[in-house]
Amino acid sequence: MPSVWTHVGRCWTNGEPFLALDGDLLPSWRGLSDQAYEALVPQLGYDLTGIPLGPGTAAVVLTDPEVGDEGWLEVFRGDDGSVAVVQASAGDYRGTLDAALSFPASDDQVGDVVPVPSGRLAFISAALDGTGEDGAFLLPETPGPTPDSGDLDEGAATDASPLLVVPPGAFRVSVLWCTELYADAVFARWLFTREG
Image 1 (spheres, rainbow, N blue to C red):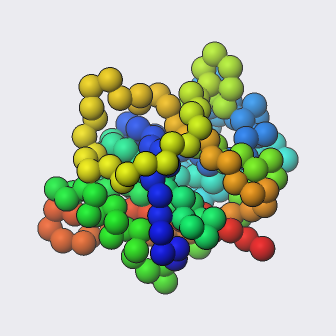
Image 2: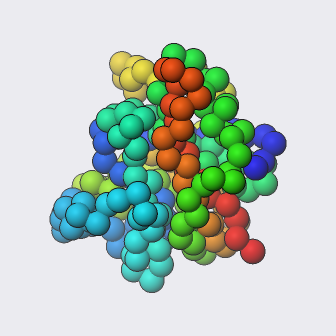
């Protein structure tokens, strides 16, 4: 695990999963306009970490209902090129995010490889399209401090998600499902580790 993580963005979920995919595959995902999301729903399960999409693969970040039905998916970049997504519910929100990032990966469920040949890694709600009128609203990553709260602030951009610039290559996805730190602190974590 990287020794230093930087918060670079967040995605608001109402329980729907997110996809992490190469930027060039965005036009291939028609979650809303072609009902691709409805077709995906029956396949959703803890063992699903990727789906074929166009000439590549999109990772599935299936939110963990044991952590929460809605909330932020926090996106971090590691100093070794890894990317992490953390879903957390806790009184000490920042402390739980920090603990999730330092938690060993030895018990992670190892999943699919996601190629990112364009060097652009996009996170989008699976319920939306990748582009167009019903497309996801992508923002460049914005490095900053780890959030102190998982609350939904008034005026927060709940329809936006981050677009990361990464070295062209591929990521291996691994997942640590709902993990309890103490009575009111739980998290789930998706790691994207550089392959090759």
